[in-house]
Length: 236
Image (cartoon, rainbow, N blue to C red):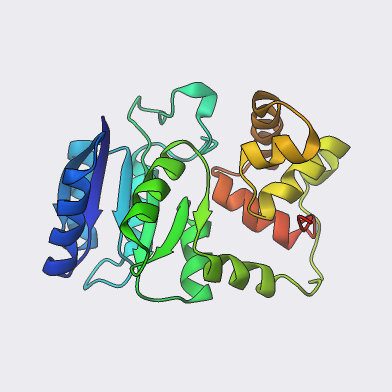
C-alpha cells in the first residue's frame, strides 16, 4: 500500500485531495497537514512514501518543509533513485518522494523545489487521473513536471552560461554523459533505455553512477546540474 501525506493550507483543497486518494486503489492517506511545520512533524511520525506538498503556506513554506523532511529522513547522501534498492535514509527511515502541487506556475518555485530535492512539480488544475499516475511515477524514483514547468527549466538554461565546470564531470564516461543529458531533458529510465537501445537496469546503473560521481542527492538535482553543465540532449 502506497502511503501519501497531503499538505495544503486550504481545507477544501486538502479534503478534496484526501477524498480522491482514499478512493484510489493501492493508496492510503498517511495524514493531512495544514502548514509546513505540521508537515515536517507528520512526515517524521507517519513515514509516508510520497508527500503532496503545497508551496505557499503561512509560516514554514513548502520549500523549507521539503528540505527539512528530506534532511530528517536521511536524504543527504542518497541518490533519489532507489539508493541501492531500499529507498531508505541513513537512519533506516523510508525516504519520501515529494511531489509539489501548487497553483503557482513559477520558474523560481520549480528551481527552488528541485534544489532541495523535490521529485516533481504539478499544478493544481492537473486532472485526477494524471495526479494519481504522477504519485506512482515519483514513488518509482522517476521525476515528473507539468509541461509548462519543464518548458521553463529548458528556457532558463537555453543560453550558455559561463561557469566553472562541475569537478565530477571529468569522471563520467561518454555513455554516462549521454545518459545524464537525457535525464536532464526529462526522459524516464524507460525512455532512455528505448532511445539508447539499453536495458532499463543498465540505464538505472548509469544514472546511479552519474549521481555518485557528481555527488548529487536526488535525480532532480541531477537534472539541474545537467542543464547548468550544458549536457542536455534534446530528444528528437
